[in-house]
Image (cartoon, rainbow, N blue to C red; front, side, top):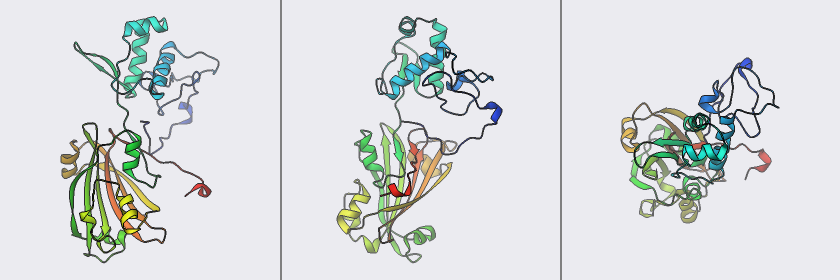
Length: 290
């Protein structure tokens, strides 16, 4: 899944460099083609120059991965096979593989069963899609339902009370769920709902899409989401649940969902591992909004 940069990096004009070769695009603003595959050497290159062979090979293999001709877990051809396929020296092939490894697209394993393998592409979650996590995870072939860690009635704390427009301390439904991708936990969701609007919610199947549940059971269809993205590090509890060290960056998404009439029906905080799942934000003209 495509990596998403949520903040643009500012690069001095003197360091902005031309694209080299057809289809070879910088994956990040960078200063070294050896690391990121953009081919920058400190000199703006003429568009008519052919890219170095190692960049062309990296582009070819990257294209196969992006077109899903090679999938997560697949073994790449050996260096010898790639040398024969492209008609280059082994060091050129190794240089191309170094680029793909630095981009996080492949991994090299040692031993009898070793080799070069395609890394699994993490699912991309679009914040601008109203239906939420579960339908998007299904799109990525992840059918495993979330694990419900906690569910019950709790008094509304200040941020929850303000977001749901209920009195401080009023009972709200809290549901905490955990998703995994393969064997790796990647997002924990802590969601709150006004108890007065969702009677009997705790008796429902809480592993399904909660937005679908709101619509089907109480005719409370969320149509507007307000989301705030806050990068940070894991709390002690999040370290335990997600299995991550405190130093690992996490992305916290604070969301309020309302009905067409402006009634708040959900406040949630989703915490995602940036190394397992990625966020995409799509901006559309106002006249294309639903």
